Amino acid sequence: MSEALGSEPKAVSLEEIEDSLVDGDLPFRVGTARAALAQRTFRVVFFGAFASNIGSWMQSVILAAYAYGISHSSTFVGVVVFAGMGPQLLLSVLGGAVADRMDRRRLLIAVSVEQMVFSAALALVCLSPHPSKLLIVAFVAAIGIGGAAYAPAYSAVLPALVGRENLPGAISLNSAQMNASRVIGPAIGGIAYHLVGPSWVFAGNALTYLFVIAALASVRLPDVAPSAAGRGLRQLTAGFAAARADRVVTRSLVTVAVFSLFCLPFIGLMPVVAARDFAMSPRSAGYGVLYACFGLGALAGALSIGTVLATVPKDRIVRVGMLGFAAAMFAFALVRTAAVAFPAVAFVGLFYFAMLTALSTAMQERLSDEVRGRVMALWIMGFGGTVALGNLIGGPVADAVGVRPLLLAGGVVALGLVAYANVRVPEQVLSGTNGGASALDGVHGTAHLHRTAAGRDVRPAARRRTGGRGARVRGFLPLRPLPPHGGRRSRSGADGVVGDARRAGA
Image 1: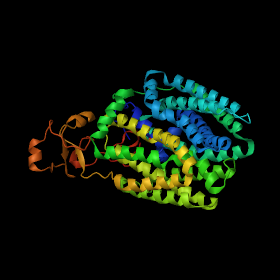
Image 2: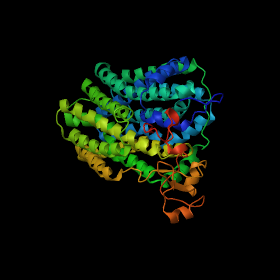
Image 3: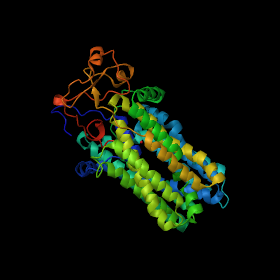
Image 4: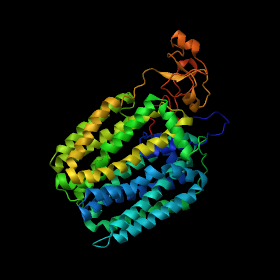
């Protein structure tokens, strides 16, 4: 992407970066990615964060297995998972507000040190043959609180370390890094858990924080312009208003919340599934491979949206992906042997992330820059936060009725969402004559014009006569102004919302 000659690069939007790092759903672009890695500061921080993320995934997966091993209780596993992920539901917006008001480099270092200390403390507690379950939950919650503060600050500064022209490569590299760590971490953790035990896995994770701390200490981070939309509770409430004004956005948010709550508890309860359905010890290397297969499928699903499925309508991918997820979940719930479970869970991950990436893409194509951050706050809470809540509820349910009915119920809910998750835009709707209006103006009454490809207003005559600044066509948020000659406005990388179907959000 090129800037006008002599113009200053546009400030990086926090929300444009934040949503791409949550889901890891941007395509890998070889040219700009190579250029981004050529920047020393970016390269140092990128690889430091990559090493740290591998440790975090290693600990997350093994922690659930260890919790089940010492308790044989799905309820306790759900509590531990909620302690680690629940802060994302409760504190993510607050973490973003803190990131806007503090020196982000110091904040990232301080939070990384906090997480390292509590990871080391967790390792010490787990050395005991009879560890305190209360201390385990407390230390995991402390690590989760640190993560809720770390994520928005990290997402704000890292892609800003490269030039504007290399932002797409920087963000896609981080997406690939997140998904790769989701595969590598569980595989290493599963083998290490089998060979040396949980304490050394947690201690190893504590050591990986040194990579990102050293990287941050050795570089100088540029400032990133905060969002003009604001953050905190004001951002959240404005997000609700924006979401209610658009059918596609509303359905996307409801779909991701319901899906995460009812269909994804199996992720945190994976050691329970492995032990009860496949007679696979959570401490075995096979358990690590099982989770790695799921992560590999998720990686393939996320990358497919920007590659082999780049030209397929996203609304079609959402519904077919949801249907495929339901079928794969039924298969995973009903298989009895580990050999079949490995490919089954890989297909679960594939359809899961392909559907989720397409859903967030469809939603973001309906949003302008001014609204996207506030709606993304809801997406992050609906996606990440409700997974933790689902595990908290799903644990006791699995203890009461078994884990297999829980998996089957998730498949049934996914089938029901196939009909609801229709995020197809009924008509191509673009902003009208008041193209420069704020996105929130559309929520409160700005007119929208129905246009053909040539840019001609094709609304019924009566509606055209009553149109204008005071009129409103319900159900849509304003997008970008219509470019000359009716062409679609194509924007790439971090700031693409219309014309680039590869953008996605959580």
